[in-house]
Image (cartoon, one colour):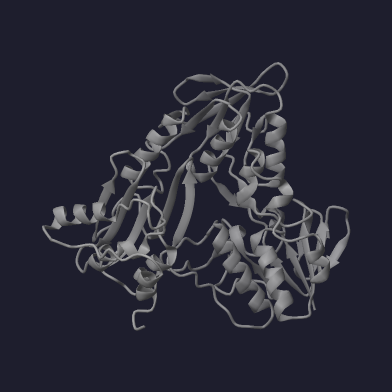
Length: 448
């Protein structure tokens, strides 16, 4: 049995490792990006000088041969699911018995004039990192980043580390306000500006202009402003990397259509990670989930089904974490940009404007729905338990100290959000000031 895996990111490599644990199948991983698997989320730290690229590779180079996982560096040009053959860039054909497609994402482009000029790029792949090094070798008086979100703020921080001035063009009225509620989004607006970035809200890219040397020289906004720059970062989201499947019989929409077993419409063909799209999304989640940990989970599910073990994707309640410069962000459950019908909320913000806690709950039965936390560290497993157990908001508030991840002698802020709730409801709810491992276990294992 030969399993071919297209893509050596977290989904493809997780699948390869689990297939090897579960079987003696022949495994071939094909990717044109790098020789070896690396941690994509660490790329920014390579550019900033905090890590070497080889430090982003979790496995030593001998790992692959020892585990009998063949690595092939090549582009896939064609997938023939009838003949079960892959055609690579050299013209060589590779036969397979089962196929996993885990090709990840590519930066969005929206047909802007000049979007393919030298000096214009996205930030997703290792090649993008190399291109940014090249594009910033010469003096850069200003860079323009088009789009907000997590990739945009990462790219801004990378450029800032080399003292390159940055202008953001964000079409929304607040930073990332298609994801963040107004309170959190306005906090991030202030934080970005406090770091010296030129944040232009409600502003869209209209055109990228070239100079006499053929490279980018400026951008034109929808407000008619021309901003001189030598680098343009396109960070207006990503989309599944599936163009090479256009002539195949594999069903696609935005991504490769799969069921909860990661199976496509073609027998023995699976898809996982950023490029996969579920026919029916898991409750509380999107049909395309472009997050590192979901890619890892999907790779494991695909591997189990490839090896004949019935397994379904069941990631549990939504969670994610990131950083906006030096403000850490965590979210658990569902906190929409605007409250949905039947929902209500409480919002606390510290006087320094760099910490906040936002809790959403059901108005009728007070069931806890979700939380956003900025600048305060909380434990994932505690909120996961709150959500799975269907706890009400008062139970969550009383036990917030148990969720605190900060060290024992750090100042805590849980009382602040409890005070907001009491003021809103007229209650006299008291925080149970229990911290540490015993408090955590009392939540996770309430009968012990």
